[in-house]
Length: 319
Image 1 (cartoon, rainbow, N blue to C red):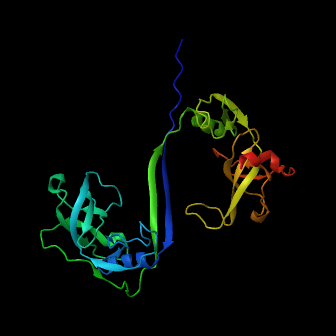
Image 2: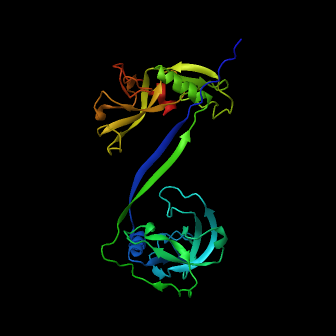
Image 3: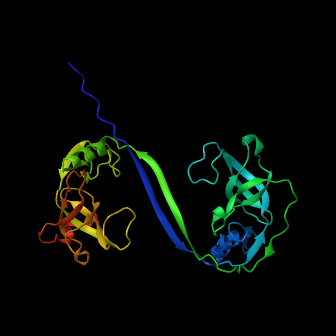
């Protein structure tokens, strides 16, 4: 008798990234514009401490603070960690140290990279200075890195009005996370069922809630869920949002609706896009069904079934 083959272990590389756009208040605007101009600014708190990078509200009193000061471009390493495998878009492409540097005139430390030949060349208490980027745009990357320094210390912080021509008023921060995802037993079964155009959850043997997607264990009762239950395919919109910003690499015209959908028989709602109906006609209680594309491994979107709307009491616990 031949032993059964172990189930395939699913793995997939995933990248989560988005540009985070934010406007700047007067303090952060002055700080980043100052970096562009080769000037490091901090802010003085109510108890006289100088914080670099500056903040807009006092961490002790929560009062708004605006008193800007200029600090030195030299400082002292307060702690460090060696990075022998730099990653893409890190400050340096050769091994370097992450350091916290208390700039001369400041009372707090700034995190950045230190260009050093090896970990033996780095120590707490060593003196360093800013190495400015060749081209500066008004970002923390205007400090290319720190480098060892054996010159004289800078002086005390001096007042600065924070006024610069063509001030930086907003930034776009690129957030990105690369990782490999491997689903466990429960989610592998869920994914396999989706490829057959079925939606399968798992029921908790204690509270009897059906989780879709399944998690392998009930987060409420803490017991394993092994009883598989097919749910749907139809469901009810419990709540929704209208998306007005077009996502990169997503070929969907805005506005469109993303909703939480409680599939029939499920104990909680999953999310999906609503199509086949004008966005301003989507509503709580709308009955919907999945729409599959040729070769798709999951529903492309959900559309109205034409049934009467569900009564609020039927889904209020699933919102």
